[in-house]
Length: 336
Image 1 (spheres, rainbow, N blue to C red):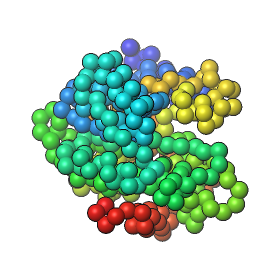
Image 2 (spheres, rainbow, N blue to C red):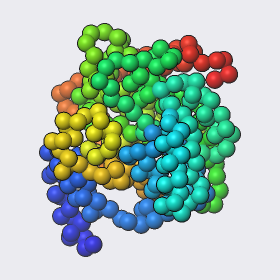
Image 3 (cartoon, helix red, strand yellow):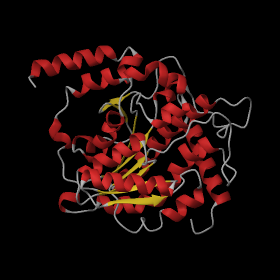
């Protein structure tokens, strides 16, 4: 591609950013992709190990497929064993990679997370993708008594990162083609722009249930977790970033937001396009310099919009972390 065409694509993509639907849809992706260097993801990951949650469908599956196609060992964290086994078989066949493995785990159940990660914690891990997420029509609680949206989108990823931090540190100490920082990616959402985290009601126990708002609240919390872990794990050569996949045509969007899906179906990205920035953050050398940032289409973006007053204080972040620790103490055995 000539420099002129690339420059024109950058200008067009920048102009499109002010129009939310086209920017988040397939058109925005295609314009920005025209400016990328294909060599950034022409990488051999045969000595790398990754864990992807929510990996049996949609963006998680597309992420796992892209990693497996580059030779990586990929652990698919799925709560449904049958669906997970089907996905492992499908991806192994399609990519020719026999190192696609299933980890049965319900990220919303902390005992599940604790048990499922025990055999992973002792080996080097080079990347962790927090992709599993739910948007629910009514308030639900897990068998541990935690509101399910918060448990799946926030508390589970928090615990998973804590349990695997040593494995990630080992991955960051690799040699040869495995050398380089380990990576953690939180899959957030543009919905977080609408919310300031309500630390006094993290489990949405007050007032009428609003599933979209609860989801956006947890996506805001994910940004705060990303920023926290980026600082905490930096000394161990672990990069932690968040990303927005854009609006993708996935089974989750179809079931959780049927009207939205119907209205915008022709504009939505496919799952591979939604997963592209995740793979880039995990595998490219260009992404290795970033930590604590929020990305859309391989570009760092602001985490707050002007005039919406969505910033959280240091005290609010501390309260979020404290609540996560208190909940884990209440539901897990001391061996956690």
